[in-house]
Image 1 (spheres, rainbow, N blue to C red):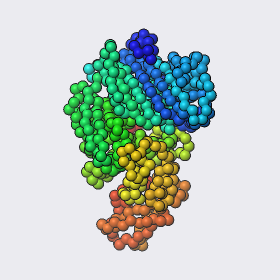
Image 2 (image 1 turned 120 degrees about the vertical axis):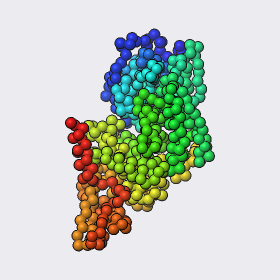
Image 3 (image 1 turned 90 degrees about the vertical axis):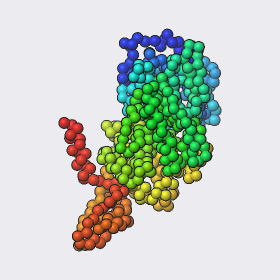
Length: 568
């Protein structure tokens, strides 16, 4: 065995001793991801991570060696990195020198390493951390994170990881907050004979060891902290090349289980047209010099950078494309290229990725498909919490309503907000806003941009920059208030009177389209009100194409009825 790893005998367990879902338990420190950044961790610039894993599916254990390179932004006496204490550390080296065991401690999941010498601002340090043990097992991935130890239909090991909610520290020592992403990560994944380990970035090569085990070597630039993933199974592979409209050639890969070639080929056939949509409507695929990668997983799915997890079972849908593949792939732009600086702005990932589904329907089939898909999303908006709090939050604090978060509204309300914004500012401006948000520039080309971070305030400033107008009123209501604006109407004396009622009496000068006897006009609603003459007996439809997200008594009644039916 490679001397970097713990002895195999130390990792062997009987089947009766294998951990169950949710085991071993996590400390509160490991269970949280994001939130206010530890002041000492904020002093670290994460240059590179070299991650060596050996995975033992039969024992449901791992052994790892992480070599982490940091540059100090300020003087440092300690390194603080996040790592689940269920993966005990066996040795640590700093710049090649072995530390005594007394120099580190990890009581709660924040590994604290006392440096042998104080590090000055601008200095670099290399920490080599050997660790291993029984990683936390997911209860229901990807909604609950950890390892998934599964079997293929013919009984072969099938392993995957997810870490979005609880964070990267579930299986490697990292900086577990959104801006803690390393500049580059190199992965070396050793697996039993006959198994493969597709992962992030570009394949550097596969080493075959004397006993038949293989080590899969990958390199990925600027990976999101939760985007690094292990995927292990007896995979078969489909591959091809995509000639981009931007002049580069993008490698395409899909790893799937044996016996599924027909279904796999049909899904693989969706890769090129979906990529063409995103490149034509948004801009260049951000990771074209690495790959577009998808791997079949024993959980539903996740936007792991350049190796999106797919577990939708090749489900068919009336819109004619696989929604889960398309949604996770959208995250390569919205989540992996454009990353929220804090989880409080999670809608930048999920709202945009959700909107890309009806937007793709529009691109493929036109207005009817777009409207149908948006209508389905509208019925899922709950309006229980504001999408943005203005405070630093953990991922779970955003995702869970019981913790005061907006929950699913970051998907569906976020999508509808973008739909309304597109109508408000126009297609051209919306496209320019999206490009600036994603790439940080309006002329993206392969090689002239890198992943970057954004906040809701940044996004609002981009809208103002592109349009030359202050749309603070729009974002104040949709992002920072839970309740939707209500449009009141009254028809009297040959006039139609409209009036916006926004939460807290806020100004809401949102234009509204009105169809009168077959003719549609757009009312400016400059002060939140509008009036228009209506001939006697004329039929009137307000917002006939459903362009504006607003309160709907019909939707509220439907949701109440639906919830009552479920409760029976």
